Image (cartoon, rainbow over the protein chains, first blue to last red):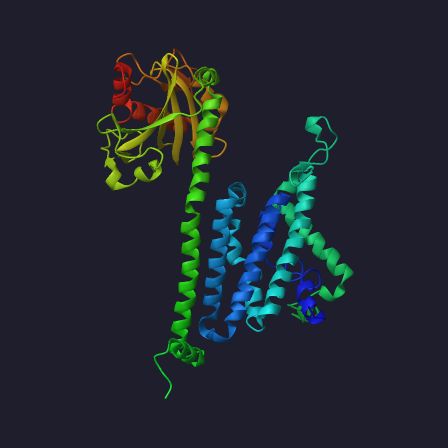
Length: 221
Length: 270
């Protein structure tokens, strides 16, 4: 693997992370991160779908008519997602019950279509696979951190293994019920993005809607 | 001249077409759709038996969960050594046990709305508000050493704003309620949804549901229950509890399992 290729794999982990930099895939990041086990299953499913979709789309990129390319990309992604969902239902039934619709909703996850459209359509198969894998792992990394914080503070456990003795069972730890509600994931993600952009100012986006008035104009009216 | 009928040549020519030509657009769209459809269908069909096994196990676990909460039933199970219930399909038109279909593979939910497998009810008959009654219904029988110990009937009907689905268990005398377990409802949260409260459902156990001549006598009353066949109402959930009364009355009545239960009581399996 050349350094160039390695960059495709490692850049999406932190420098151009799809969740913290591009703010994509937030919906599922909120929904499945109440426990490490669901977050891990979702991460694996998304990484597999993203890598396979990038490979397939890159493979036929030269023959996709530009007028219907988005439709074809979504068709390929949707087929892969259904297959992944069916496999989960057959071999990990309880987990698929807990994830409910969120595996199916990978279709609408902007990370997958985003990588297909911006990378796989323009690059050979191998870099596309690495890019898909890298972005999948970047998403997984964020999900695992959020899930570790939420399950850790919300239930005192990780992967269902009780680490902190609960007050209700004679221990000292009172679980923070708020951590198991969706808003807590927003706060954790927000704090992560803030910390990341403080450490790496290059990630701060320019103001999309800069102010042009100076205030004097308003006062003159 | 090249052999134009060679499949490779046709394929090569197809790929050489300009991407935005009509032929290539249609061809690529068709090809991608075909491959995607094949992948989805093959996985779906290949994995169906495994998925169905999981779903059946889930439904059985729910039923077993209800039976485990019924008082005294654990003892019956221990005495007889019976691990599972016997499932029979009752033909509600004839009140006889139907051998026409396999109880294990019977889709009760689909039969409830399928015109070919159900009978329309007149408004006088339809006290449970279900519109159509399925022709076949599964009934779970559990026998102890002294004969029939328990009959579990799947029942459903309209409450205030949703379909309430439950299992109603009758004791071996076929007149006393052994338990009621509501497993699906969409009543107003905090008000009607309190019909799922285990304490309230527990009030049903031991009540007399049918009179000696087979009339449905059990009902939910406002305030405190009097007598052996009344159940306390829940304030704020009047319509929902009335719905439960009505669906129990319908399913134990003449259009429901009533004739089957009478025949079962008269002796032997109908």
